[in-house]
Image (tube, rainbow, N blue to C red):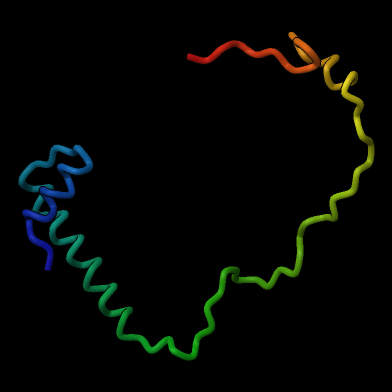
Amino acid sequence: MISIKDVEHVAKLARLELTEDEKELYTKQLGDVLKYVDQMNEVDTSSVKPMTQVIDFVNVMRDDKVVYEYTKEELMANAPEAEDGFFKVPKIN
């Protein structure tokens, strides 16, 4: 199913240098993985509903509530440098 040429190609894409022994080992291991995937594809899953979570979560997030709104002056007081009412940051080239 998987050839040594396939393993060499993947190794080249991943910029890996493999020995001949490693190429043979990975050829067998990747072939075993693909056989297992084929075996799983034979299982009838037509009655299984798709899911995104193992446990049903309704909503784990709290409501967004404004507790205190800072004024612009309060926020700008934290700025190391400001110019015309905005944060001044170093130029990025």
